[in-house]
Amino acid sequence: MQHLNEDDLVMHLFHEDDAPAGAQAHLDECAACRAELETLRGVLTLVDTAEVPEPPAGYGEKVWNRLRWKLDAPPARTRLWQGWVAAAAVVTGVFVAGTWWRAEHVKTIAPAAIATARPAAEQPAAPDRLLSLVVGDHLDNSERLLAEIAHADPSRDFDAVSEQRKAEELVAANRIYRQSALRRGDTRIASVLGDLEPVLAELAHSDGSLSPGEVESLQKRIDERGLLFKVRAAGAQVNGREQLPRKVSAAVDNL
Amino acid sequence: MEPHDLTAHRARLGDPDAFRQLVERHSPVIFKVAYRMTGNQHDADDVVQETFLRAYRQLHNFEERSNFGTWLHRIAINCALDLLRSRVRHDRHYGGDPESAELSGAMACAEPLQDRLLIASEVSRQVSAAMDRLSGNERTAFILRHYEGMPVEEIGKVLGIQVSAAKHTIFRAVRKLRESLEPMVRSNPCST
Image (cartoon, rainbow over all chains, first blue to last red; front, side):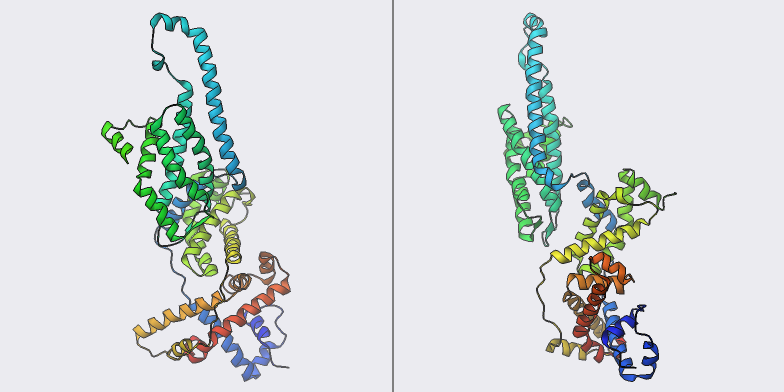
């Protein structure tokens, strides 16, 4: 039998069925082929010595914490226009509801309102509550996104594929909510949304991966303007979860 | 038929807590596969994340009579392969350099413990560099055959190539590893 070539020896090592017949018998007799086989075996043994680090304790939990809020995201291609459409639909809905509500209010309540001379500002504003609800939701989502960036490790690349998609969605809605807040004279919310927008836009325009420098720059922007706190405070206020004390409110405005 | 894994069954029905349990249970194993495939912790973490994202989105395709871990394992391999294929690799000319020869010459069974630890660490680095010389397909084919014991036919399916091509991919991988690591093997009888 001829000497075994390297491919034959690899087949023999991996116990492949189509290893050459009689390979073992040849190896028993041929010192040169045996030496070749041992060299290959040595290479594979050396490869086996390469360490695979144990994941840190609580690794599964850490994976889950990064993963959990990404799980509801719809497919990427539809997100950007869906964000615009959803935001536009909400604002249009609020406008239509407002028009309807005012018309009904004038028709049915006006006589009583005239009698009691109650100021218009004291009347309940259903459309405003609806808008508050969606803006509150938007601020909650933005807060989670900012928290992801704020807590990212600035010494390494950050996989921002999901964050970038989320930011695309949020930045589209953010513009509409900010304009709507300005029209309604809600300068505080408009200001928070105005501060939020460039950060969302920067993230939305990333290519799905942030370098350590980009992570650090974003973290600096979030930190310098107290953005995370402002968004959290605004979200809590809009959602009516808590009424900020006047001093805190003033501090937020001054950030 | 009774589901193989009740937690996977619950997750498939939309129970987020069940999916959380699956993530926490399988992450460490998937990490190890991902690490072997990618060769570094950062990429391994990314592969783990992507694996569970894909698994979540494909849960409806999971056949409950199958083993969830095996199914997940297959997704992880595909994720790692995608990452390897998308990564632009700089060809690192390796092997036969003076530093390597010097270090490999220093290897001996009788070295003091501290030296042996240093050498072990260097071996790890060299193996890692040798693995980095492999193309994405070569690395995947080799790992699937050597560590996972996957039949060549299956490897061909994973890589989307013919059986004979899969076999030659494994041969090429072993040849490249040999080129890089043989000097260390020859100078270190302990490794054989």
